[in-house]
Image 1 (cartoon, helix red, strand yellow):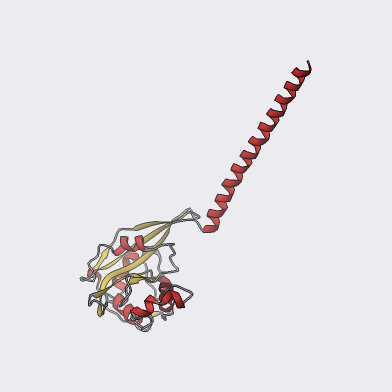
Image 2 (cartoon, rainbow, N blue to C red):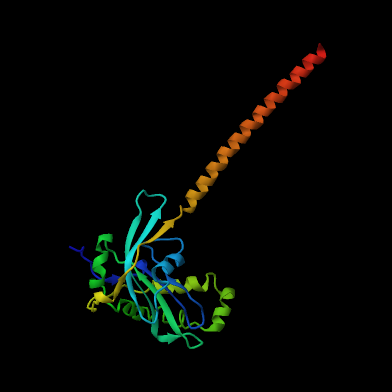
Length: 240
């Protein structure tokens, strides 16, 4: 029996989204807090990099994160899609692509239940929910002249500002949507390593340096003792 899937509520804290604006190139407008990775590009490419955006292929699977601080890897079920925006185009007239991954709050054992529970148009519904944030003139429609002048008048980067706006999107309900299990493709498990926290790296580096410094100090002390003994021996020979 498949594990149950809870209420379908998409929160930005579990949403990974990469796209572009009318005048700015592709970048992440939302990265999840759960699961967490220091960088998401290679993981996103492994999940939907070879998908056909024009076909709107739906994928689901597991992301396996190996944390150096844990003995067991973390497993996170996901649904993903690479698709073309039905309305937005960039400044050259090309359709805008979206790369979307949602990590629903379900146990890894529930992954096989996702195609029958998540609506086939989940990505389009989330995109519609992002209309007031991503679709605003502050993000997608930001004029080119403002992008060029951004560094001179803002303390944070334009990309960070855009993500902060998108992160304010309220939770989006997928209830009432129509499922289409046959449209989904089970993707191989994507495995990623999470590097140690900066504090741990600094501590490890400091520890290594301390040990090396101790060895160097002991070596200098030993050499000094040997030189003193040799000097005393020479003085004794001269006196004789």
